[in-house]
Length: 218
Image 1 (cartoon, helix red, strand yellow):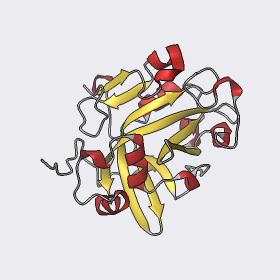
Image 2 (cartoon, one colour):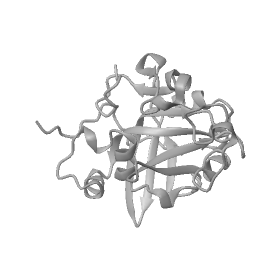
Image 3 (tube, one colour):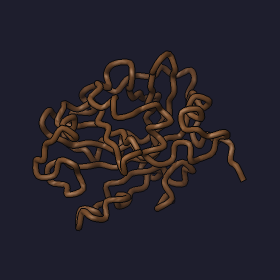
C-alpha cells in the first residue's frame, strides 16, 4: 500500500524561522549538537527551487577519537578535508559509489567533528523531491535514510564545503520543541567495522516517526 506524505509534526507557518548561528555549531560537544539538531529544518535553494525538511534522525561522529569517523586519528585527505573546516560547514561524501551523504561540520576549525543527517520529514517542495528521486508518488522512503534525504534536498558532492550561513543550504529553528522523552538514541547504523565505536549510542531520532530508519525507531 502506498503511503501518502504524513506530517508527524506540524509546520509553524506563521513562525519566524531563524538560521542557526555560528555559536550553535562551534561548540565542542558534537553529541549535544546532534541531539539538538533533531527538529530543526534544513532548507535548500538551488536554481530557484526551494525544498525543506525537518530533521528526525542524526548520527554524531567525534572526529579524532572515533574509529567510525573518516578523520579518526587525524586522517586528512582530499575526501575529508571539509571535515576540518569551522563549524557550520557542509561535508558531503559519496557512499557505495552512489549515495551522497550530507553532514554538518561542528566544533572549531581543524577539529573534525560532524553530524550525519540520516532522515527528514518533508516540509516544503515535495513535488520537487519526487522529481529528484525519480519517485512517482510520495511515501516515507522519500527522505528516509541519509542518501534519500540528501537526494530529495538536491544535495550532492559538489555542495561539500558550503557555508551553512549562506543561502544555498542552511538550517533554521522554527520553535518546534522536542523533549528528551520524544528523542531516542541508539548505536549508529552501518559502522559495524569500527569495533567498540560501533556500539556507542551516538544516533538520535524522533521516536515513532515514520521517516526514521527501521532499527530502532521506538
